[in-house]
Length: 636
Ligand SMILES: [Zn+2]
Image 1 (cartoon, rainbow, N blue to C red):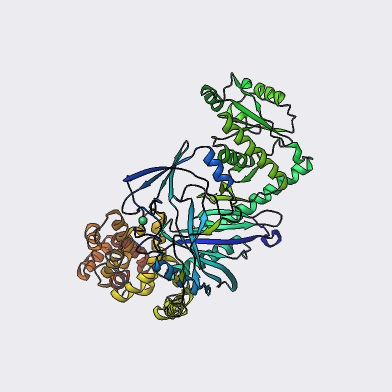
Image 2 (image 1 turned 135 degrees about the horizontal axis):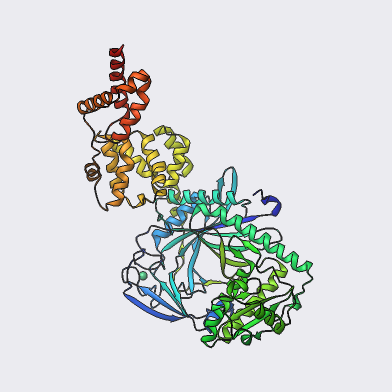
């Protein structure tokens, strides 16, 4: 795209959240696991705005509270107890989790705090039964080196994970509290990242260090990145919940694009001479315009007795249809706000009324009633009056922000790298002390003990893998990023299969199978080791490995030996192979007569296609070469 990020003044900071593989949760003894199936326990809570000690009430929380939003929590007894339900105070901080967090901190050259204080961070969405999240800083001022650049690590914290959202129906939001209380380590970088690609590389480097502790959870959902992104003239926007590392650079470049487009809208509004005071909260009931409408959305609303309210956005014509991100028009940003603050289904606006079945006559009448000129836009909402008014107020507020440029806000990442509005950016003073959990002193002795036993750092490990196993740098790096680097060493040690074969299988073959939709991550270490044992003992060939893996994924709990038998991939004994090759040569007399020794390649291809996985290619090659030479000689 050729965007000059340096010139745009792009600054990105990362907040990386990684679940830890502890035996228990952070403040109780429950298993840090998720459950499937039906919950055993359900309980309902009203969302209460939490009041910090400074007496500030979060406006977004207060809004939801006013609307009577209720939270339905789902639980089962194995993964939660009275602590998660907020019926019992938290227990002491999990020491195992603290040790992992401190280990991470030392690996990132950070300075551990003298005493760990648990704090309460206000959370406004019901994802915590208490109304806050417990968090504690364990170390500050770290530094990691990424591609020759020092990246400051501002702090490393230990936090409890939040409940997971399962759905939302009307005023009831459902959360499952199995995830609540799972220990997370949070790593926060300084805002020193200047390109989308660099953001991804830094995240990757942090991920490698976390995994090097061998004490973090793996798999989708166990690591989540929040990104703080700003450009000069834009605003600081926080994007939450990026789960895939490969998405980070996309999220950053999309956000830059969005901010630039919002700045274009700002400039256009200024050019059109819009002033702040032109944007007024004058809401008009326009239901009468649409009595005979063919627009389904409006028909349905009127059947339910809901009025249709409208507001004029002077000089906004054409801008609501302006695309700020692929698939997100500026009108979508207004709609997101309306949905959040008004709990309405959405909005309609004059840049797209026709596509919803509103007729020209209706639009003309609407414009007349609103006193709107051609350069003005109109936004309409059909809902209960109080919701519709809240929605339109939010629309006007967002329109005012458009005149100023980019609003600071918290957004959520979509799976395609685009984002959606989540909530306003929380202000300062969101933290206050957790008095139920005593602070923990961190002694110098303890830190020195940890420091003396730090796990191998990723870059050290990479060098060692290259040196001791003779694999190349690319494979070594892929192995470390694959999370199979430990298994690699076990397999090579136990089976005697060539390190390069093992490494390539665990990285490239696994990746290719995943792309085919084959869930190789479901295979157990024992199964994977078993496959290589069969190769090492000569019972099958390395060419058979992908087929065996494929079969194993499709047959839960099966053994590699079963795969071999079922697939008919046992090795063909040499005697038999010789006579099989004779058969191919007999059937290819013409080919041999024509090409002589040059027929080798074609024959080899034929035989390997039929016998792949049951013979070693080098054996076939050797026998074939011999026999072909004999035949060619005999013909002369
Ligand atoms: Zn518990």
